[in-house]
Length: 279
Image 1 (cartoon, helix red, strand yellow):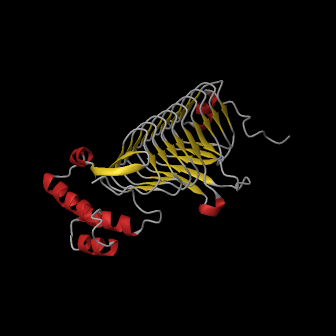
Image 2: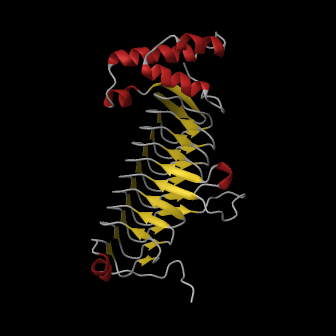
């Protein structure tokens, strides 16, 4: 008889069979085809599907669902009622074997929803390391989330969104599909982001506009006041509407500061354009 994908409730016997310190509550439902590394813990009534790889120390909380073709890196914790690796909310999706890859030491809080990718966009939704993904957040198909990011409660990422490292999205932020959020950028609560937010920027509003640089976040991450001076100068030039964009970028390109160069590369590679500034 063919195995049902969720047919293997595990218990303490697994430790005796494998020699691995794996804890699975008797009420959890885990496919016999799932790959569980030492130190994995699966709590009561959680479900883990057949194409799942859980690295060392992963903790799946009560009633959480880990499904699809999903890899979860070491030390990641998935809290109750999260749904991880579900099919994309995309009308083109026809059940293709696409993936979700999650890195190490992420925190995925209650009711978070994360989709696998779509075949048309490469087939992978990817999450880096050490991210805090708070309750009720949605990460849609083909998103790329860097490392060290904070997605506060109820952040909503549409498909194909790219979030660079150390970005901070406050509660209730909604991000349009294909938008990029730059490194160490911050988006204020309840903002609607329709275009790219440059690295190091603070964006506010609906639609979101650039207010200034994210000074607090930069200082907390090792930037000095002299770095902030350079970035503020670059931002003033970038949003100087009295000049043509090509001329503004040429002026910014004269600055060799690494953060300014990253800002310049980000803007040059923008496909949706960048958010306007209030200044």
